[in-house]
Image (cartoon, rainbow, N blue to C red; front, side, top):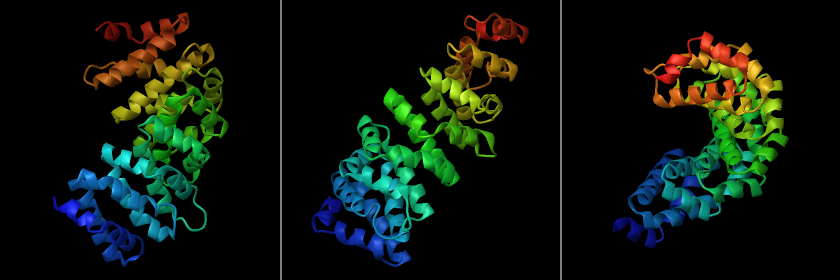
Length: 309
């Protein structure tokens, strides 16, 4: 079709150059043309991704932004993610994420947004770890914009789920305190949800991390997150509570003292999303396992009937 003819005629390189160095109006037109070529012809995607990736992490912050913006657009499609990854994007994105004098805050935010789409495959996760991306992502939890913080927490969650080595490296690079801080302050529900998801992934099967997260004062804000109207926030909070309380009597006691059991019982309401019900029930199971006091608290808060139902 015509996209292939246009690409074969050598259009990608000049369009990419316009994207990095043209006037703003020209950049927008070039980005639109490249988007159209990519979305209308899968066979052109690798060529376009390769052309864009060469520019990632290079030039001024201002020139990095339109390139990264287009990569975000392309990365919404899983097939494009494969092409972007194959073109060697991840080390360059980590360089851009790391920042320095030439990278704008917006370019860093866009780099972490692209990475958040790419971390759905093991190869991408390994590439981020190999490019020493963990420390830059942990830094982004503190220094980034709210959107960048949310993306960074989501990526760290995906990485922690993939291996215990990543869990330990993320923890040793200092992720716990900033993740707990994201739960504490007036952040958007989505940011809090991603932070809770990362805590869930880091604490699963890691007794030392369970203890460290509790000592960082995560208990109360996680219980408070159960009150959010956002279903994803409620689910991730309940999941994090279960991960922190699993086979950990100290944390079971702390969640009971913070009124976690009664809040979780409130989420067994059949009017709520069934995944919220399921995560709340799972957390109650963990909190009550081999814990007579919590079992009595569950009964006293009328939690048995909705569980049976």
